[in-house]
Structure formats: structure tokens, C-alpha cells
Image (tube, rainbow, N blue to C red):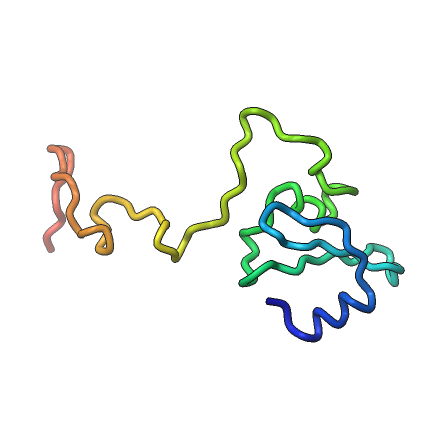
Amino acid sequence: MATFGTLLFTWVNGKLVGTDPDGNRYYTERTPSRRRQRRWVIYKGRPEASRVPPEWHAWLHHTAPAPLNAVGRWPWQKPHQPNPTGSAQAYLPPGHDLAGGKRDRATGDYEAWTP
């Protein structure tokens, strides 16, 4: 959820450009006050930057002049997934303490160091 100040600034100065499938709303300034127009996002739910899809990320960082949603998706493109680091869906390699701490025995090319 955005802070009260961000919501007030958006209500006074913001113009809605669009939304993404997650429900995040993207805004730009109604009247640009500088050379580059400000662009920002109001997240639906907890603010998490990795929830911004690549199409909107390019627009937010002035890489694309317009959101890339109108281009369409190629058949090989997968749907956007936020970064799972620190969550229950995070990847844990074999031998990680949280994955049980057991790993396959090393082959003959590994020798433990002993001081």
C-alpha cells in the first residue's frame, strides 16, 4: 500500500497510463515540470519492485516511450513471475541447511581440506 503522501501526490499530479495483470497502476505527470516526465507505480498490495513486468519496467525507466503491452506476446515468452528469494518458493540447492542439509556424496575428484 502506498503512503498517504504518495496517494495525495498521485491524486493531484498523476495521470493514469495503465495497469498490469497484477493490478499495479502506472502513472505519469499531468503537466511535466522538467525535461523528463516523472513516471511511477502504485503497487496493489505490498510494494515489491520485482512484481513489475518487463513491459512496464522498460516504460518506467524511460527505455520505451510507451508501455510495451500493445506489442503482444510471443509464443516463447513465459508469464512474468516475481522474484521468489526469501519466500517459501525460493530455490534451495541440494545440501542447503533449509533443504535438509543432505547432499549427494562427492565423486573421486573432491578431497576435503584438512589443516
